[in-house]
Length: 99
Image (cartoon, rainbow, N blue to C red):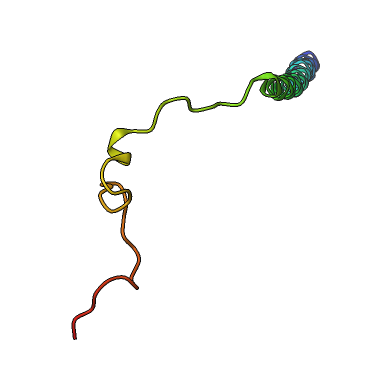
């Protein structure tokens, strides 16, 4: 009887100890993974800042964009804005009103 009680207590405490060890290992691995994730996010943010800074430097080196194409013949044809198909008459003062 005493031997069986000793065996039951030994098995219970052994299982508790093994469970505690496995949980400690799992929690430690999760903490390390979280630290690596934070370090990776910081590295990505630093890389993004470097890219933006480099783009700002390169934008300063580029010449401004200049449109060298001649104007469209449709815009210049006719009597100016009256015949322009793109012009919209929004001038209400010049419209003739009938009573």
